[in-house]
Length: 328
Image: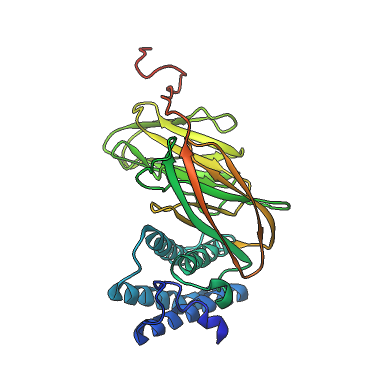
């Protein structure tokens, strides 16, 4: 019963004394469903996923009807949960790799809601999180210290001894629409395939000159998709050879413990094994930050960070290494 109780308030505001009985029942449904998914996956019985996945769908619908917690962090966590349950219904191959990955994303969404909207998480536990967690806020500021509008798309990740990674079993997509890349920032592990679908009304030529991961996907039009395997750790700057305003950043990181801040600056990293870690913070216009932290089992480490844009924005060159204005 204690295990179920730990998730009951994961999607609620911090004022827990006024919870409606119907909401409490919804939380119990979510707790039971997450437990059911875990048991089905451990037993290798994918057919048993249908019932708990349907329960989560109904529970999330009930929460939306009753009003969800405000804030970009809550919206991002709920989007993660919805995407994870959709993918659990559509495994890659037999699901041997994607099921574990998708279930971890589901747990991460639940943990994120815990940390953002509930007090005394250490006392109540972090179910369905495994290990410890790290969370907090990050504020983006100009070089002079004035606040920037929005603090999203800042990458935070943990480095530690003995960390091993595998290529992501699902290929993330960076779409082209309205002469923009979306999302603007993506994080993958080495060996991951990244897809570049053209959902625009014009042609694009996606390329990168980044060392170790350089590529040129050629010119292709609406409805077509090209892809690339990114093998080397590091930053991959992605551009379009036709439209110089198009920029996307892909971080290839040899760690599974990563996150990207929401628009309000909230962030969390779930399922962190206990031990000593280095939290790194990345933004394309800021200096690298490193913070030594210690994570303990079933507890949350909270950090409030600030990132300043100390680097100027510099124009990039086309795939031939020339200015976009040059004729060739």
